Image (cartoon, rainbow, N blue to C red; front, top):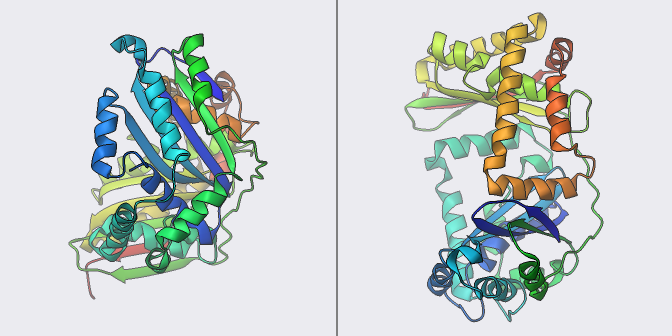
Length: 401
């Protein structure tokens, strides 16, 4: 168990279940938290489960499945008021009891709840074309990461969801939890006697070895894909290789590259493509330091989509050849440093950070990370910029011509 001492008025108890990511288990790991976090043996319906959380002074349970490099992580984060604030000496034990019921005291999963969660997920798939941004992201990922697990949907494909049964999910639950890595993070202002109560948790931390690997995008040729859907605008996704991962000496420089390209309101994309040229409704970039990619996303007017693609390409090319300015570097550093410092205002971020420090033992201490950003030079940023290579341009639009 990892403890984070903070002065928030709430306590968080977080559980992270980590295993190697596999295509065959994606749908299991996406649905399992939703089913586990909706009922127990003594609270067999979703309504009764929610009512129980309300009796615990409005406690909340956040569920998530995400990827970190080649690892799949299911997280369960319980947030509840500090017991001393409500003068309730039984609150912590009641929370621990509920956690034990969720993870341990089970005989099966409620069939109706499983059917409902499965139906929700199937409906998302069946109506995905109506959610144009989601559909564009899904299709772009398939194309940009073709022949790679990175291009496979986190929740699995519709065929995976349809064939999954309650019995199969139950079998997976029974076999996986005893084998995979489990970390428990406790974040808050708890006294020694309260920490002692946490020993009543039936589920324990498990340090099953994990092997972290990075799978870079290796597309060899540049592709341009146009796709039509009835809509009144166009959505552009442009995938660049930026082969710099978290452990690379140029990692901080790559963070600044992303910030300057499209990571904040003073970025080149925002100021030039959106504000000066008026070509987009929204535009931004996202750097993935596990896959070594930088993705530009934008929504534009139908008739301006080709002009937008051309000018975005030209903007990135100019950055690669001419580099950035000293003022841009200082602004980007200030933004990143502010974002990192302000993260201390979020209990959930601190909880997640504690887990990531476990997952990545080589992760620098917070002050060291700040210092590394401060020390990034103009030359390092320009060196990182030169590694950008455009590989996939995807345009979803409503023009049939």
